[in-house]
Length: 528
Image (cartoon, rainbow, N blue to C red; front, side, top):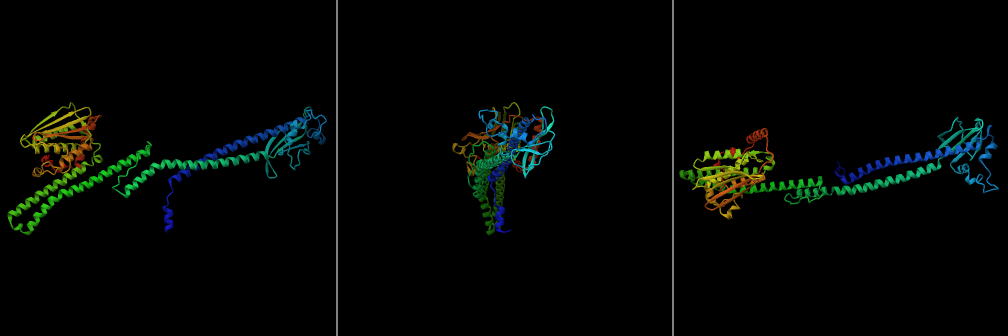
């Protein structure tokens, strides 16, 4: 395939021209159909008028010659059908040729009047012609071809008024000259109208499609900008058309925003992992270098290095696990948008688990709900949030080992509160505790095994399900974490509850979760 052929093959035809072309074809077909109907109707009316005129002429000839009782002779016909042009009394209307309807008919160029005797011999002709006569027993008007042209021929037998005997035949031939001229003019006018209609329809269709495609062009421009520069913030402008294209533009903008968030999250994930893994990798590398140089010959140094390396390896494993949890939390909308959970059941389960795991702590549970409360959230995610907050409360409650848990509802929200009486958080640190890897006291947090991701995971999960999480704290007096989630207005029926629970259990088995790998809440740590 040559380059020219390839270019011709790859050449695109604009949708505007396609639309204009096919619209014009449709308009052409419609206009031609109407034009044909109008033309046929109008020509039929004209032809019917010619038939009426022939019938009138036959009636006039018949009335002039029907007074005879014997067969017509040439002189008789001439007398009645060709009166003298000059008259002594020009004022006599009966003899005025301008008022004689027969003479007026004879004066028409396309009308020929012939009279024949009973034997078919021509007795009279209004104009010279070589037409052949065919007798008829009754009046007959029909189309015929003479000298290669279509004509209208009317034939009528002439009978005497007195005795009813046949006295001759009258024939009127209409050459349809005026009819054909009018029909040709009408056809020309309709053809011009068809061309004008097609031209106007093509122009209007092109302009209309250009206007309709304007939003598509804007969408295409936006896609090209994003394609050429993935970091571009280009978006489709507000179309203000309130139609399907506007919905498509909004959907595209939403998709681009979501893609941008995912790209940012991926970059943030890589940066965070790279930053946080740098320290444990450096520690492990330092110990290995020391062992390779001289430490392997010293049992104490060898044991210390191995323990330190193992500790850093565990911390790296915990960090990677929490980073994966955070990554999954940022994609909740894609995987868990239809999950429904009974808050009372999860709350009671976590409460009982922590009572068993931490017998040295006092847990109080205040449930102010009067019936089961359902929210749209994946069960494991709600449990994970509660475990993070409770583990965080326990970790920083060294003196007064007491945790209060409460569950209540408002008009449309369910409120979960977890209060501890530990170290508390200063006001300047409260706004930062949900940031990734943030620790209020980094040295003490390291000792407690925290990576600074627990509260970030809890915060992202709650927001992903259209809720909010807040904190109230005071140094030396403890903290209160509050979670608000929207309540489902249409509560599921019992069979739907069972089906939801079964679905959640199967999802829990199919999708790895942090609790599957680390069932011990103590390993889910997020320091203040």
